[in-house]
Length: 253
Image (cartoon, rainbow, N blue to C red; front, side, top):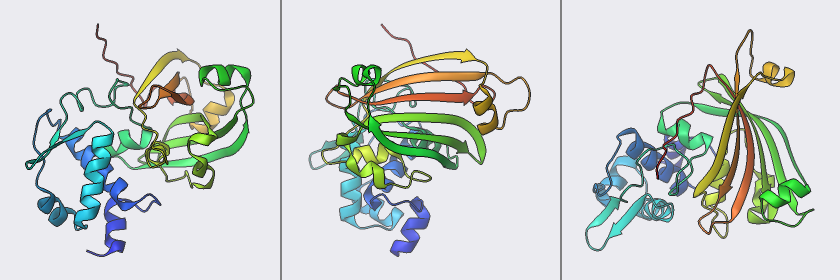
């Protein structure tokens, strides 16, 4: 299979092929509600199925291992980590899914319209949330997110720039923010998040951006995401159309 065909299979974005393959494998596991402990096909079978090299397959599997999705079984291949995919999509202590991850898991087409990207100093409130010094350089972005060409959310992200300086070079009309964080050096794996949500009326700007006509409520969410080292890496506000988005949560002890 040619590289051009690989691009067609995994989406024409700028991320490394192994990372796109990792997303594809994870999405299939989630769609099938694969139980913890289930064995994956052999690396040879994955090579044949996806038409990529064994090196690419192995890097994709190791990427999923770093996310806590897979475990390696010495001389026996790979298996789904216990509990890794239970409640897929929740903001749990194993893995946080971004908008692109959720779209892929549900087989939906995702695209974004970038409204603004910039770098600026953090405010005192932002610095406190991100455990950074006031004035720390932030990467800031605002986007409208679409699923199957329907406007679903307006998203406002703020991240310490030193975590992934290449963010300023990315084309976020297609690129996955969390994918780029996982590919950073060193990797920044979104592991869990503090999340709050409330219902309210849309602002005039939200009504225009989300193509709202009539009485449609907004679900407004604030999310503080932490990496694998329990360090906050992203502060995000999200305004969702209430008629196109449902919030689910799992409550445990």
